[in-house]
Length: 147
Image (tube, rainbow, N blue to C red; front, side, top):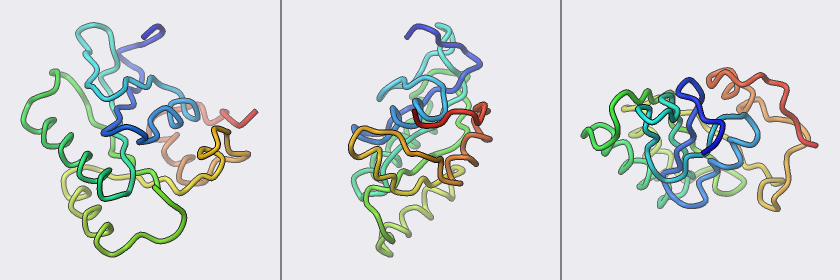
């Protein structure tokens, strides 16, 4: 992980396909994969946990939050937020909204809407307002746009 910094943002995916890579590319920071970064080794201490809004994704987010709470992560990590990336266009079923409320009861949650360009490996032509707000949270420069 070249270019990492303890003061940067680490995007931690709760499961495969969560969207951490897309978020790191759009907003900066380091995609650390499906593991906790180790600040003692110079990796980011400020983290964002990323998962999809599917039932599988929300279960994975809950497990990761449990591990963080149980001390199964390196010391010194600061969870800025849980970012839930839409797993499909449209509204979420009530059952998934309930699960999100449970996650929200233990950590700040930011939601990212469905971004069609990401599905085909592209970049959006503009950042949805939810990504702009997330950029403010993680201290991104706000000047990243699609090429």
